[in-house]
Image (cartoon, rainbow, N blue to C red; front, side, top):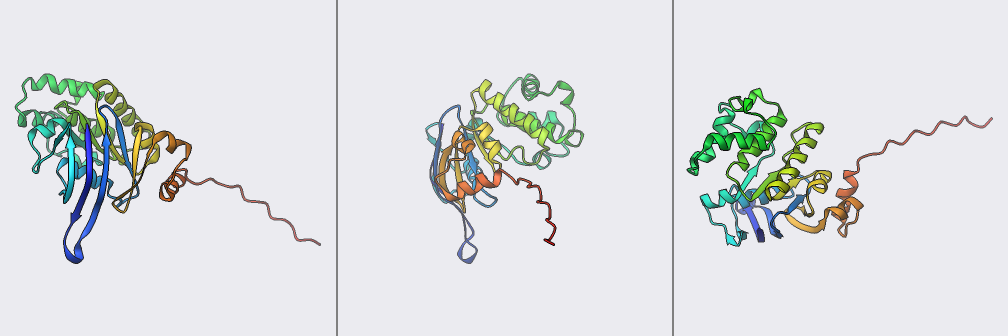
Length: 259
C-alpha cells in the first residue's frame, strides 16, 4: 500500500541547514498498522508530513498504491490518504461547526449525499447526530479527536497517517481513541502509519515499527519483540527501558550505631 524509498527531508541551507530525515526506507502492506517511534526531534512526524505534502521531499520516493506521489499532491492522493493531527484543539477551525468541518472535504471533491455521509461518519466514530451543529469549544478533547478522525474518514481513504493522535488526551480517553482506531481499521480495511513516542501505544495498535533517531532509521522490529523487551540496537533498548518507568524502592530502615 505504501513504499518509502530513501526519503530525505532538508530544511534551510548553509549554516541553517537541518537534515530532518536521512535516507529512511520502509514499506507497509495493505490493512497493516505500522509505527514510527523515537524521541522528540527524531524526524518521525516529518516523515508523515513529507508523505502528505506538508514537508518538502528533498530526495527519495513516496509510492502509494504503486503510484509515485507528485508535488503538489493531487486530489486522487487525498482520496487515498488522510492525516489525523496530534492536537485536536488546533486541528479544528474554532468558528466552524462539526457539520461544516465534515462537509468541506465532500464539497472540495464534488461528493453528493453530504448529509447522509456526515451522519454516517459521526456514527462510525461513536457520536450521534446531536453533535452535528456544535462548535469545537462545545466538545471535550476526546470528542474533538473523534471529529478529526471522522473528517479524515469521510472521503473513504485507504491510508490514515496518525501523528500522535492520543498524546494530547487524558489517559482514559487515550484508551477509548486507540480502541476506536483499532476497530475502524479492522472494519474498514484501513492501513495505518502511526507516529508516537509512547511504545505502549505503538505496541497496542501496530504489528511492525521503525525506530528513528536523529532523522535516521536505526532498527525495524515487531510489536511482539517490543513487548518482550528484545532489541538489537542500543538506542531501541534504551527506549524500552525508559518506557517501563520508575519503580519505587522502599527505603531501608536506619540501623542504630553499635554501642
